[in-house]
Length: 400
Image (cartoon, rainbow, N blue to C red; front, side, top):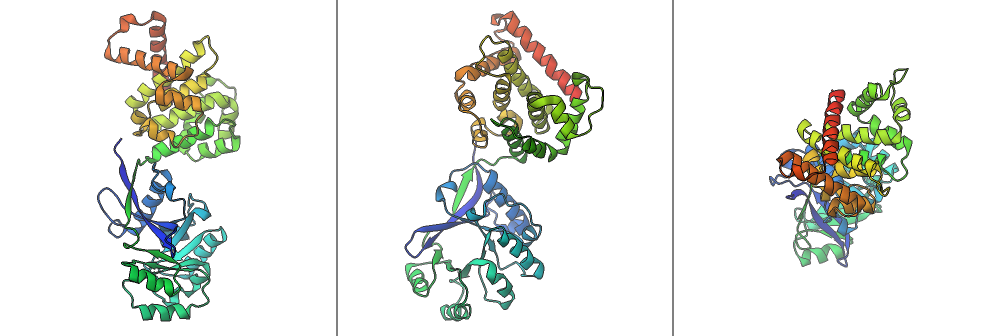
């Protein structure tokens, strides 16, 4: 799968040239900047790509990430899917330090998040934010040294670190180091580097979370209820299934809790994964892959060996079609899933008992779709595959 530009990263060093952080900058494949696409969109895409994009170019820094966010994002108290010790939130000079913003920053700070005042202009309007700042970043290329030092002396009580950004040469770095600056960033030290990776779609992220929760080694009912309740369409579909003739009941089920108790874990796993995948894909693609998954499940059920559960076989069959269902190669999706080693080996190499079932299912699927080699198939296997195909069509009709 071709890789996309997720963002850019520029390291931040201390006076000894030891890495202390990395600023993450908005970038895309169209070479647009945050100013060109707008701060709000840039913030959303950067955080999404950072948290859901698959790349090892950011993790290897193992230092806090400096991330620009908008005032709207802070004031919304939106969820930031990063631990406080992993991030420093930058407040850029374009933000107006209103009382509402100061209140929001105070709330984030109480949660443990740190802040950097970016491209600080030493304006008194920013004074209310100083108690919550861990870093003050100063553009040393655009400002006069004496002016900077005079302003720095005014803020002698500031207990955080001073960062000189846009350092262009060694003389500039040494001058500000001797003046008490602790952190340095700029072309002299390192230019921003594009971070390439696989960008997961929101649908792929959602399906992967459902799978992680439902197929966990020890599923937690509270987690299951939470992840399902966050998807109203999925919840309604499950309620409809629970009340269908497939699971006859005397009393109508109208709550998610009722669905969970009525269906039980194994049936809930299959239906939730099936419906979420169907919602994320085209009917034709979903029908093909769900037929494969159900066929793997049937092969496991009918096997004389007991080393592959029907749930594990279903999941392997489903995930083998991630490229068709979700537009994400299986190898990339595996990085987001907490699967057992046997399932990973089956998906990567078609090895092990589950891999053998998948390999057999793919062979039958290809023979039927291409209408070649059907005469070589065991009549019982071919009959079972056609039975599953008809069953999946009935499921589609039920979901409609």
